[in-house]
Length: 331
Image (spheres, rainbow, N blue to C red):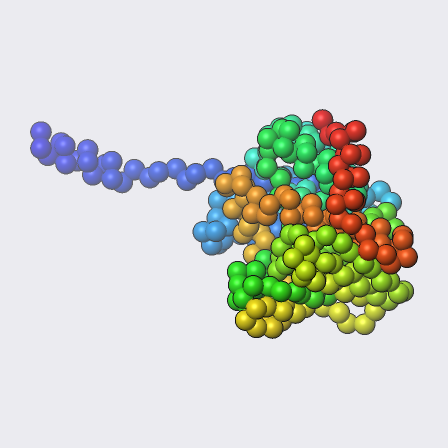
C-alpha cells in the first residue's frame, strides 16, 4: 500500500498543468503605426511578466474615409499585423466574438463614438488611442456611455509615461509651481487644432501640472501656437506647438525644490504596460476627469483663438459640451 501511494504521488507531481489561456485583444482601426508597435509588444513570445499572457488575435481595419494619410496606411498595416498572427475581420461585431478587450486605434477621432459603442455594450474594457474623439462633445458622450454601461475606458498619449515625466509628477522637483511643454502641432482640418498632434504636448503638460486649469489664452502664427493656462491656485502652464523646424518633445518644470527638464518620449512600451495592467484590473490608470479636462484645455484654446486671443474659460466650454452631449447620449 505504501509503495502504491508513493507511485501515485510521483505521478501527481509530474502531471503538467495546462497554461492559462491568453487574454485575447482586438484592434479597431489599422491606420496608425501604434497598431504594429503595440502588437509586437503584446504578441512577443518572450514578453516579460508585465506583458505576458496577452495576445492580439483579431483586427477590424477601417479608419478614416477622408484623411489621405489614414487611407494610405491601412493596406500596409493590414499586411504587417497579419505577419504577427492577427486575423482580419469584416465587422466590429465579428471582432467582439473573438476578443476579451479592445484597442480602439482609428487615427481619426470622429468615428470613435460610433466604434466604441458596441464595445461598451459588450462589456469589454477598451483603450482609446488619441484623440479620444473628434470633439469635446463626443469625448463627453464616450465617457458618459462608459459610466452608463459600467465598462472602463482609458485613453492616454504615450508621452504621459516617459520615465522622466512620471518622476516629475511623483515630486522629483518638489511641488510643481508651473511648467512649459512643447512638441509638434500639425493641424488636421476635421479636428480641433490641438486634438490631432498637439495632444502629446498637452498630455505632457497635464501629467506634471495635474488638473485645475481655469482659463486658456492662445496665440497663433502660421508656424507656432502658444497656449497659456492659468490654474486655480495661480500656477501657470504653457504648451508651445510647432509646425516648422526641429521640435521634438520636452519642456521644463518649475518646482519648489528645483527647475528640471521634462524628458523625451520613452517609447511605446511603458504605455503598453499600463494598457495591459488596465485590461487585467479594469481600473483606468488616469482619472477620466483629468482626461476630459485636458481635452477641455484644447477646446478652450480653440475658443480663445476664435475670440482673437481673449481668455477662454474651461468651465464654460465644458458646460457647453456636457449640455450638448446629454441632449444626444451615446446609447
